[in-house]
Image 1 (cartoon, rainbow, N blue to C red):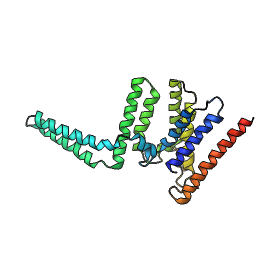
Image 2 (image 1 turned 60 degrees about the vertical axis):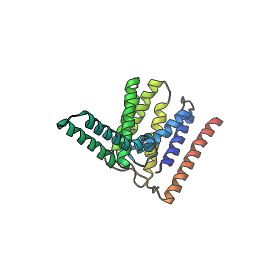
Image 3 (image 1 turned 60 degrees about the horizontal axis):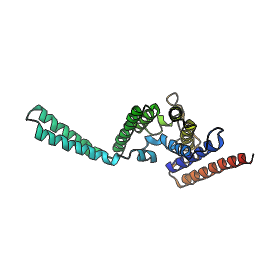
Image 4 (image 1 turned 90 degrees about the vertical axis):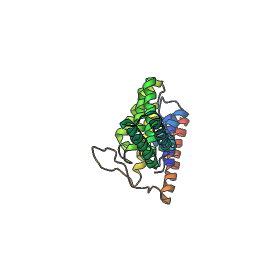
Length: 246
């Protein structure tokens, strides 16, 4: 399913949690969190919306390697005397330059997300927020896995919900776990409607659960995604209005 459809379904899920779950206040931030969470499973995909947004540094990664290579070469040339250390310095500079030149597309994205995730881990350690460090680890690891592998499992959904639970405890923001978990699970349910399906319980079993209604990327599939989003939105709205009458 397309990222825009996942986002729409996640936001509608956030509205459902905010408007229909007793004790959860209606919160635009919570709805936004559900939308964010609905995109999280696709951090393992190079074309996902969230992957591109969180990998904001990817356009600078290659230049960073080039700059390091140039700095090493200059330091070696002006500071190191002839000998093994000098040869090692130039070799390291050449290695960094070649790596920077070789980085293309997905490899750059992965390194950028790794950098973003590790910065988040450090921020969590500095502030004492365990949930923030766990979030950073998730962002760091997910891009290095194959698409629809571990991020598309019930275990990953449970982990994401637990991160929300820890955030709830740290921030005192009631309902974080439900917004986060609801958004994440909405992604898995939506992908279950595609022909590829989802292996919810791997590695325990490779059984793929699917209701093959949608062929992602096709014209009919795109129209069906829009119809599902509209239908889901109307369903949530209808239930919400029904409760208001009583």
